[in-house]
Length: 289
Image (cartoon, rainbow, N blue to C red; front, side):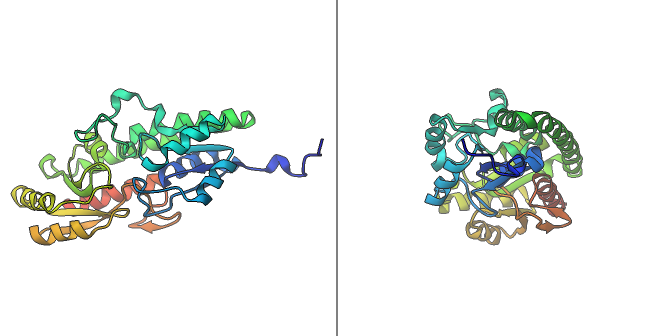
């Protein structure tokens, strides 16, 4: 048998992830023991993403794979199923969420809405899947992952409390969030907003002129002050709606992708889930005031 390489003990676990939110979650739990490579960077729309040959190679070489699930990575789902059949450790982080807490919006044909990270309590429920997955591959690090997982859940508990307090700065009737696509249903339920998306839950279909006209009417009727574009969705249609309705664009918020690691906006590191959530909520509340 070949001798183990010197320093093999220090070799990090090779993990491959999909969207930026999952990448951050695995880094928070894995710490120094893992090397995480995310396939989708800032500004990438997972609904439309197709795996390149280089992605497939990375996934095949990975020791553990984490993805979001609930068909968020629509075009990649079959690939994960195939990889799981080869006895590779493949986990959808959202499998830790109780099904009764998931939303099934009309027009989703019985599928769940995948944008669960906008309710911090649901995202916190995804931590255990990562702890379990890493611990199964690396039993020596199990206690470490469990400790980090607990610490991160505590951080998320504080984030949720903060988000509730920020939302409460707006009177209930002013909490109307208008965005490019329906990514904010869980956010609405958790923090008391009414949400309207120009497109449906997935960004695969284009917004029609009729959709745009009815949104313009809605904005005028409800005297909405500001609407928001998303970093991962082309803003043109929404900019036209804003113009026609005479409302301002209240800012750019993150929906299906976070910012670049270390990117700071308004004092928040939007390359982390915590910072991205704080930036979004602050941007929304400020524009609505």
